[in-house]
Image (cartoon, rainbow, N blue to C red; front, top):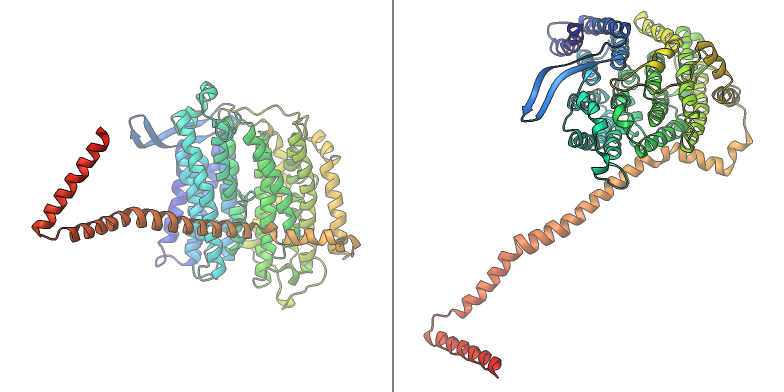
Length: 635
């Protein structure tokens, strides 16, 4: 089985190399076939590995097969750790990647840089797999930086488009902010445990003398370490305030939007915190911070989606909001429950993006939903799949989102703390907001009259586009029924806390009569009235409401805040450069001392005239001064 595991990254890197360097040997069609086949083969291998791992209660694959750096006691190896947690993640990543590869064969067929695209997405998948199977923090960081690098290349795929270059630069810079803190967190973990290896860290965690470790800013050493790591995850998984890059990443091709949002880059932060769950279990303040950030992101970023008119950006803001649910679950140490939502979200989010891509192709690359409408009859298969994705994301009963989202809310409610109850209320409101923006998108795009051009040319796409939609639609409907697996799932050297689960039917019954379903019904009513029946509510014109809407439409001025901070730092660095570097160091020390020596030497040069009577006068004057000083001291 180890050979199958090692074959996965090898096949992915082969796919990237073959499609990237075969411009003169293979045409586009065969490049797409080879790349899709290799990734699909990797997916099949992951299924076999996952089946074997889940068939045994205690089977864990853990090995260092290559010693990369070894200096005295400092060791960094390359290896793998496959437990139930990473085995399931392998399947999710490779399944979504396989579907996206197949879809891209048709979506990207008219692009000149077809092979470059397939080379990038294979490398993107390889980087994520490297991160998932890692058994130490350095290997995880290599995969972490790999997905960051390739996402930069993919977001800026249309490099002649100015907005795409701005978007990929924005993503790169925001992630560098997070990575700076992430590196500091890794360094602190190494300092505490003298190892980057997961097993060594987790085995020694109970022997760590927390009382003798330093505290910083009121945080314990472990709290601060985990907070720094989480700031890295905030950038990767787009949490407030480091979320601003993700909506702009829609400048990349639609298939890569699906891959980034569903199973790779943005889920890396969630996976990392879950993998380090034994360390995060020792935190208190940091987990509360994680909880509040997650709940705030779920609610406030979801509100932005209600007023967005770009079909891909609406789904992008919904991704950020759903990631907020996952982060909130991490904040109450419910790591596998968070992972359950990651698992179901991967399917319905990929489905929504690929459906959006089908719509965009049919409308000749129009992304403005205000120029759509009435597509229900023109694109029936896309409509049904989009409807399933929408019902899943809003948590409609019996869909996958119903199980994973309701489980997060239930665990949050029974956590029995004030901060978790506040987060619970925010997430319930977030569920209401999710229903409103999701149904708004559905009604505006697929109902009413068509508002665009060339109505007669709008038609369903090819089977290569539709088959991935059908596969993902089925998974979006039925993947939630694996809930028991995630409730009982252990993570390497961490056991899940006991959750009261009495079976599938009682859970469904309880979920249907929960506050989440009430928020769903209220959201349905509001959406139908506002976006289907076009009802004009008077409260929408209230001054306070209009001001709130203006603040939401401005995206809470986060972009402006970052621009202001960058300008402030630029001016501050310029000021200190002028005062410290130019004035003090250069002016007073480097150039100032030689200048004053030069002035003194010039003066002394005028005294040294070369006449003997001048020197005799100075000698006599000096003797007089010396005798005067002696007389003053004696008398």
